[in-house]
Image 1 (cartoon, one colour):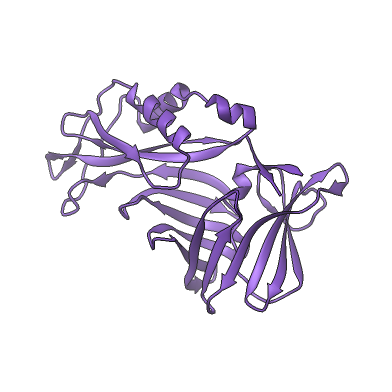
Image 2: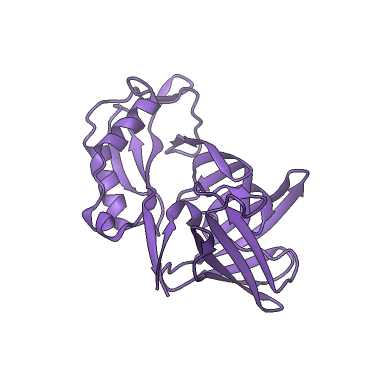
Length: 278
């Protein structure tokens, strides 16, 4: 059996067990936003208890008035009251640790680490299971530098801001780099230059990737690479090609009047469905 799952949903499919129940259902609309009921839902997440510390997550899609056969997505093992180890299914080939590091009136402060212990993100959430962002989420590159900030309202992303970081961590940026027309124009040029890989079109796949690069003292882009391991290599190569094709100089960054090199990031996302099979 084959099911088509929007990649937007995949970014939300994380586990934490607040209380042990045989099965809980959560509903989302076609944009991946959580709903209070299934009336207008397009997608359903179902959590089933395997044993007292292990839980399974399944995905279903609504076809007219009925739900498709559930597709297994993840297994999560509760290590203690605040730490969960989540393993993806064979198709997704990944795993990570989720840790609750704080709680306030808004909900929880959560950090996620990959299997190598590298910090992936820090977020504010209403619920930790399923992870429902509400507030600021910070994404980190493979060197631990914060590369992007996203703002969510009850699971709906309303803003993403890519961040500048000094190459020399002993300096600070007092004047950010400037691109003719603004950084929004730069990202529009990047997006316009990206070509969707044919293999992704044929397989109805989607995905998102980030690349990092240095804006040097001359305003040129150099040292471009994937911002973090685990991103799709085809999309990463295409994003690097698109960024490299832009031959317009930046006005470089400054630290108290002195020109300095800084790291910056670019991203692209395709929302075509991802194919999963049992």
